[in-house]
Amino acid sequence: DFGANIGLHSTILGRCGFEVRSFEPDPVHIGLLEKTLSNNHIKTELHRTAISVEDGEMEFVRVLGNTTGSHLAGAKAAPYGQLERFIVKVESARPHLEWADLAKIDIEGHEASLICSLPPDIWLKTDAVLEVGTAVNAAAIFDYLSTSKVRMMAQKTGWQEVKSLADMPTSHRDGSLFLTSKDQMPW
Image (cartoon, rainbow, N blue to C red; front, side, top):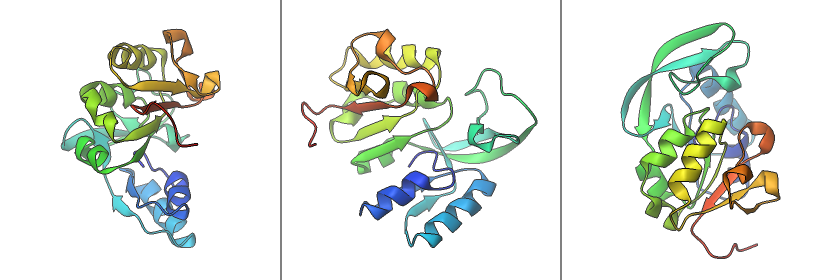
């Protein structure tokens, strides 16, 4: 659960019997995440870090009026409202994706940087559902994956396979994007 926030997806996945790794860098959200997990009797491997391309530290921007919009510095072109900035630890996504069967990726504008930094063969074993965030991110992800064997299915088209850039979600209003290398889904 990359970008676990207060733990909704971690809780659902835990309730479904999955072994879950939750990643959240914001100390305020971590407190709420721990409470959500405890109240629902869910155990996850909690990482108090952001997810990125490599291990290290980065500046984090907390959007005070809407903390669900908080993000790694540079991930959003024009953050709005009152902001707090502080340094957070970041972990490379790759080893966690190599471990996982399914990843939820909602890292507030940093998705294209992450997806385009990974070799397409990472998706041979791992599926992902992600928020794309912007038209720029949609174009970058589409351009990077459209020549690979990775299939993209968009919620905005009723989960049909993405055939053109117009099929890509460009904001949370368009829903999520599903990535897989499977020829058929088990449902």
